[in-house]
Image 1: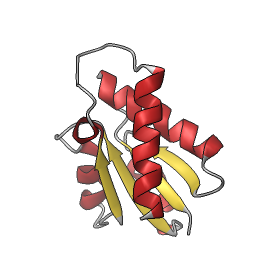
Image 2: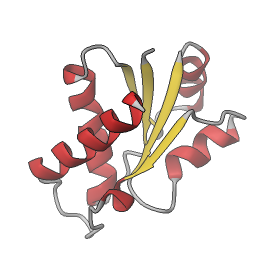
Image 3: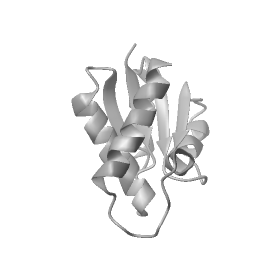
Image 4: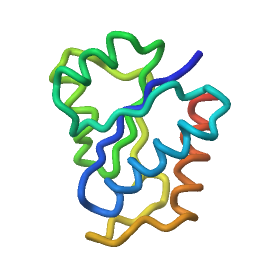
Length: 115
């Protein structure tokens, strides 16, 4: 089953990390990720994306869970939810995400998808 990934895509390092991880998964997941949509997109775009999604994974950067909140406001509960800071990635302001962090978060997403 393919997942649509909703990323928080915030301005902090962990928010930017979710967007970059989603883009990487879209390219490298062997079609296990069929779409990656930023939660910051207009509500109508999110509604269309989740309506057509087989399964939904929300990838939030921190415990604020902005991506999950945005989906819940649409009345949608994700099948899976991951938080970057729960995967050992420190939230440190406006720093750019490192490649090793993208790899670590991508691996955590793939582990969750494979169940």
